[in-house]
Amino acid sequence: MTLTSSPSQLDRLDDADLAERLHAGGSRIAAELRKVIVGQEAVVEQALIALFAGGNCLVVGVPGLAKTLLIHSLARALDLSFSRIQFTPDLMPSDVTGTDMIQDDPVTGHRRLSFLAGPIFANVVLADEINRTPPKTQAALLEAMQEKRVTVQGKTYQLEPPFFVFATQNPIELEGTYPLPEAQLDRFMFEVVMEYSPEEDEMAIVRSTTTVPPEAIVPVISRDEIIALQQVVRRVPVADAVVRYAVQLVRATRPGDASPEFVRQWLSYGASVRAAQALILGAKARSLLQGRAHVTFDDIRALAKPVLRHRLLRNFQAQSERVTTDMLVDRVMQAVPLPRSGL
Image 1 (tube, helix red, strand yellow):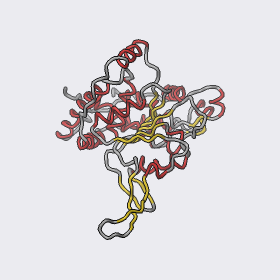
Image 2 (spheres, rainbow, N blue to C red):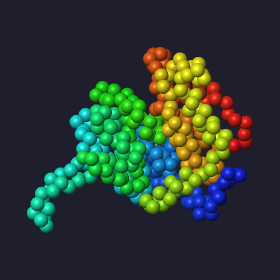
Image 3 (cartoon, rainbow, N blue to C red):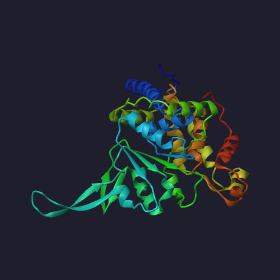
Image 4 (tube, rainbow, N blue to C red):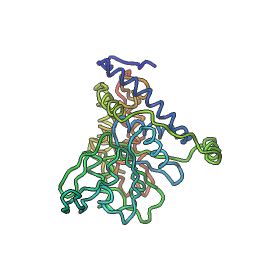
């Protein structure tokens, strides 16, 4: 397939080739995931966008919707190292990052401190039920998610690229949970919501999981190729009008004199500049996955909810009136006019 382009197309020939490989690679990964995941097309697309954009994902859904299976299967299709951390109330930060251990040196016979790496040292880290551990342990992920490194006992260790955190969260069981602080939520590129499948998809799930085991997932993209594809995503040009639209959407969520009245009524805080960065970077990856070398306003609007829903802090009035963040994002997109452009 040949990528469609615009006046702001990729300039370098090798970039155009990488863009073709990204489009084809996304299709191959999706095909592998379909061996075990039925439906959930929007969820799979958002996971792939986060992958090629190099972002972290918070996956929210009730039990039994294959959140963990999706993430584990994605890691297997990528030929990357994978670790799963089951977050519990007694989990300690050192259980995530690792710690220094006293060991005997077989050569000298002396004892020395040796760093024992924790499960965070993997390419794909599944933080299962992340809100079931106290904030002190949740904070152990902050540096890894943002700076791609871990500091233990004053010494810093770099994480091997590519590095992703996929966290899961159950929205209905609140007893014994610790809500994620806003600073950590802001480090997730997307909040992906998994919902119940349509009836026909659910029938297909039941049939496939009550017969013979599904076909094994095989790796289709190497580590080095993923890193190269992430770089070409960043080199996709974006028209100023698209960037301005993304920035205006984000700024409209912040309560203030210039914000819409409903924002001042229902929100305590809006989205940070990270949200605009995530919109643009995600839109670049989405355009290449769909076979385009240019970003459109539709790319921004398609990603507005996964980018913004976890970054909007509702006040008591909004919660009492059952105004959801998704409803607010819809209102914001209605309030911010689309620029007059053919993009």
